[in-house]
Length: 457
Image 1 (cartoon, rainbow, N blue to C red):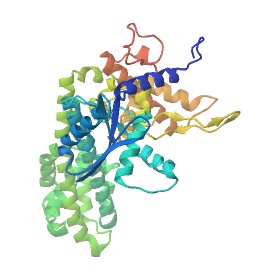
Image 2: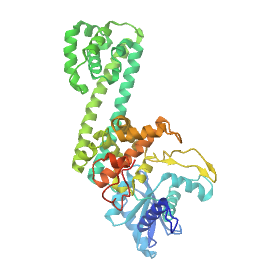
Image 3: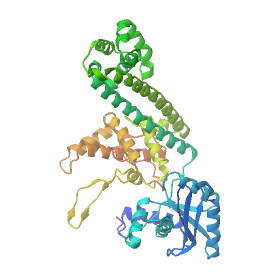
């Protein structure tokens, strides 16, 4: 807190944000609020007192909104304004189309959160009345009140990383679903197969052996796999093993699964059909793993183009692909004014609930991007043991006498710490430094003016 003005760091950050928004929504501009849809577009041109200057509805796609922007500019200039500021809800992909059209015409653009529009609709007349023209006016009104934000301006490389990250996230979901479905099927009709390994779904040898057995069991009959004999069965598993990302087999697991071919425990009436279905599932799982590996290879190539691979590889315990998954959700971290803003964007920041002498229990806000929150959580899960700084932080948070955190709460705090590290590493272009991360030493170079972050945990 400043000793002269009493302003806190939050006050200064908010003031800077409002100054930036005021440059995008100047008093000399009229505001064009657009309620974007598939084919029907509603627009309202207002002044800064929310008085509607003109309205227009168009039956067109988002890519055909150029004439609407030209019309709004002419109407604003006729009313005495220099230009317009375009505002819309950031729903789907249409706002990106509108952003490009506005940039081509030299017009500034901001976005309004859909929740803000919903709340403003209730405050307008205390009803739940909803229509596209009214929403367009409410979007414009919220913009004049600066209840808006500047949308992300992503270049081609960062956009590609974001798209690849979305693809990888979907493939990871499909891979997990296939593994769980396979376990359910085997528990029902062939539970002995799951006893061949301590963690069967995590064993490449077990997965390869199961794939060979199920492909030989046409129609769910395991007899052809038994007739192969252990030697031929092992040779087939060796040929299948590279598809599961391994080169050395575990003979104990393969032998155990081969002997399980004689086990008849399970729901007999469902066995043939369930094993036939399991063959489809394990083939889908294998193909999904191949596609995911291809996507991850392309993500690493994007990091090479951004010259970030060596910097991210310097973080102990954090895989490069795990850091790439996080950056795919954040976009360029430099667009955030500070590391705190990035943590808030993820929803990993604590929310306070206090009034007077009452102090409520702090919880995670979870108001940010859930995909980013999940990516940070997954990345920090492995780093918890491989990174000494995170391990010490987790031990401190769970072992201190006052305000002791649970294991899950401490992991969330470590995930937020990892986001701060990534912000500092990417924006400063410096490798990971354990002393700076642990707070034992301050950075030797001052922080950039737009960053305001450190690697301190």
